[in-house]
Length: 225
Image 1: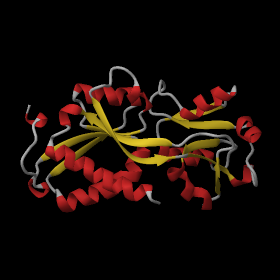
Image 2: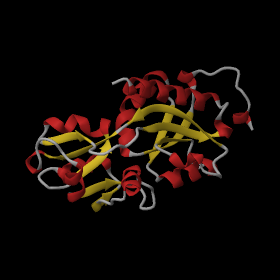
Image 3: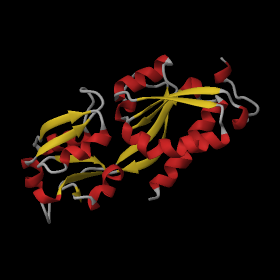
């Protein structure tokens, strides 16, 4: 009940709180180093526990109170049953594809993309893929040779092979100088929102609101790059 009522004041430096967040390893790489650094300076008594749940499980965990905040891509927020969940846009992200330079140079065509075997990063087997949905609307399907839940391991699977990885551009564009080539997708695919979402019971919880503002500030700086 206290978390549903506006609290009159909040002192981050004296806040004793343990927050439980769901983040993919991509989200963790983008946000967590800066977030932890800021917390150690301004809120040293705050503790974090990070889990990596699939989309449906993360939202269910928010509803059940298992976690406090989920950060990622959640198109299913619009579906029925999630009316008690709130979300805020952190930044818009786009997809790009990564492949070994030795296996393809110059223009990476749509035919090249479909002909190659692919790596797909997905925390849960049942999670939808915007990439595969877009291809299905065009009447095509790619071959997924390797599916894994670890974004950080995926680029090394591409290196020295004929595999293609399609992932968030921010996660792979820096790898283009390390024997790998990062390219725009050879078909039209809209950008997607990277958001933080929480249950409405936390809406007026002052420490929770403060954490959301910290994450939003970090994401805002990332989104401008």
